[in-house]
Amino acid sequence: MSFTHEKYDIVIVGAGPVGLLLAVCLARWGYRIKLLDNREHPTLTGRADGVQPRSLHLLQNMDLKRQIMAHGPAKAYEVAFWDPAPTGEGIHRTNNLPTCPEYIDARYPFTTMLHQGLIERVFIEDLNRHGVDVQRPWTITGFENNGNNPAYPVEVEIRDLKTQEDEKVRAKYLFSGEGARSFVREKLGVKMHLKDPVAHIWGVMDGVVRTDFPDIRVWILEPSLDI
Image (cartoon, rainbow, N blue to C red; front, side):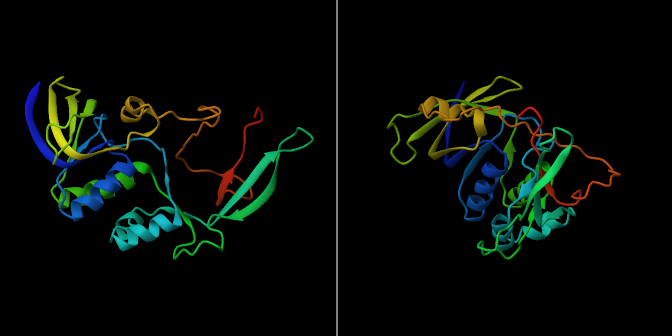
């Protein structure tokens, strides 16, 4: 294990959209950042493939909207709800709602549908321009506030998943952007209170669709028949 104890303003664990956006903001303000992700590559498959209206407004203020829109995302202005028909045969539309209700003061009244990997790429490119890289594939193995350095109170243990090399660094803050399987959250004893963590399963498909389905160009929510 390396005991170099390099010092950072913040260690961010997880380079998904949340961790990356935080890093982008802090890098622009000149903070010293250690950004880790346990995946060897950025997101390759669809996950959270959308940007909400107010989030797009935020990205516009950060001068990142143009890079997002350069990928040609779909714009979802409406969401359609479909349910199994009462007769048990087929499905029927039960409601239509705007993706951005009128009571939300949004400059861009639509949901921007774009592959999460492309969203991450926009953030990563901005980080690189400000001298920050994502350290991959590295993970966190431990942390404690041991009082050894009041200015950098958090000691963070990290590991290179390729070489199994361990390091210890110090930081003013530790941020977890790891998602549902958060090592930091579990170590802190913060429980997730969910009725059923696998109640909803999402699937993403890319392809050319030929259909007479009336809502093919809007955002559709349809439960499976066995829910």
